[in-house]
Amino acid sequence: MIPNKPNRGSAPAPDHILLSICGDTKTTIAVSWRTDCSVTGGWIEVRPEGGKESMRFDAVTRYFRSDIDESNLHTARPYGLTPGTRYFYTVGDSTHRSPEYSFETEPENLTSYSFLIIADEQNTEPFAAPEYRPVRNLLDLALSRCPDAKFILTLGDNVDNGENELQWNGLFHGLDGITQNIPFMLMTGNHDNRGFRVYEEGRQEGKYYLDHADSFDYQFKEAYPQNGPTGYETENYSFDYGNVHFTILGVNAYETTGRWALNDLRNTDRTWKLAAFHYPIFPVMPEGVGGMYYGMIPEALDAGRVDIMFAGHEHSFARSYPIRNYEMFDRPSEGTVHYILGNSGDNGFASNAGKVWHYNFYPQEERNSMYAQVDVTPTRLTVTAYLDDGRTVDRFTIDREHDEIDPPHVPPVYFDTHMAFKGNLLELAARGISARPGDGTVFVPFAVIAQSIGTEVIKEPGRVTIDLYGKRAVFTEGNKEAVVNDRPFVLYTPVFAGDRGELYMDANDIGAIWNLEWRFAKRNNIIDFDYAEEDFPLLRQPPKTK
Image (cartoon, rainbow, N blue to C red; front, side, top):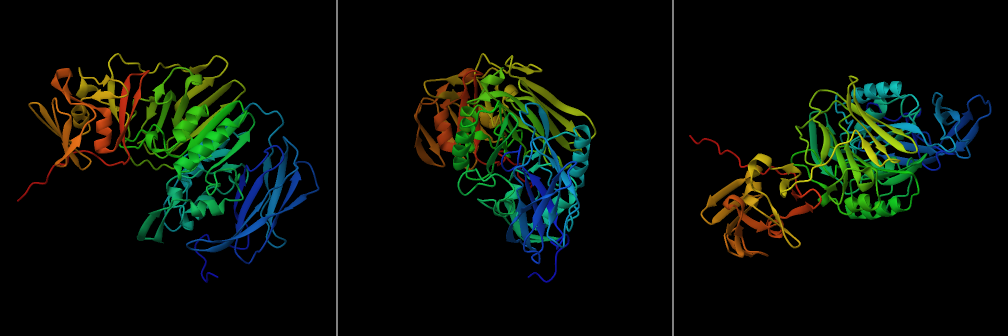
């Protein structure tokens, strides 16, 4: 036993009470809570509104040892409930019971309802007892505006370090009174997947990221559906509510996750398909890694015909055109809208920029928080993003009956082949210079792209040298061999001179030399290159020597 309990540590009285969807939402619900190890079991007592008789359901109890505490985790799943009914409940054992809270089961034949979304609500202050005050204030506002919201969906980074329980104690403390009365559907982000081996005020050492969200998966195993891919069931799950199917994706094992998601999406007959993945497939961070590096996940979205893909991670807002196979379209039936929600914890951290894919963008560098409200009907789905000061960031509606998005906005279709790097169009740097599609490839003046992203380029008559991501390559006009880090490199296609005398290379050669991925959006006439890391390619100014 731990001799000295930490601040907000487990006690005999139930805390960390969490409502969640796990099964048929018309007749069942999951309720989880925590106690110290002196309490070895527990149950939930449930009674319908207006009723006097309570039903008892025993909990599954599991021992949990974190980095700072030992506790027992309890989850009960009341079943056989009446659809469309409010129930009141308490949890605990015969000695220690919670106050009374309530939940409502899904009505029969529900086709119109609302739910809320938050993202990146992690908070670290004060260190010993994080308050999570910004997201609490935000949800108080959201629920006052939408009191009939059926549940809250998070988009990951719920805490700053998911392997350190101090953070989860802060989150549950901050959301006390909310997680007990409305289902709270957690999704993992990279911060939920990491920890510090030494996590003390003024001393954080040994930061690590896991290939499996160990603490998250263990804590919430009984709270969420266990229908994800083998070994990753809790961080990946799906559920239905009304006429909507939700596919929730974790941040690990992209190939495994993608294969599961594809099968999950193909096997639903719900009117709407919504997915959520912490990392944006089409990011706003200038250095952000795109969907080319997320295994089968983009393929699953396309083949599964997802209506909206929700993401977080970047602490800024953006919404894309409908996209399928990296091509941008007008109508919702032609692709998936990729929706990045800004941060919900007043914790902006980076300067971002809208890219070629984005219909709308807001950098969220002001000190504020953001949430989204989703309103579902049989033929229309409306998403509205709000700031905590009441301003509306974005509102759009997918009209399935007319196959339209309102407000309408036509995506770009270019006459000449435009070039982009990580979604950033070159524009001024490439004025009068365009790429040239070929048979199974695209020929690009890559030196122009390299110049535009700030790396070293040396241009000489008939020759160009590009130093990027640790590789220095020399290309010579008319030659089918380049020199890469002083070694010969055989090219697919000889180098040739094109627009304004710039030297053109095969995109496949560029990809092979610098380990870049590229996609050509034929409909929009854009080639985009991406690099697997978030390294900055800027050529640094050398310091002045004395």
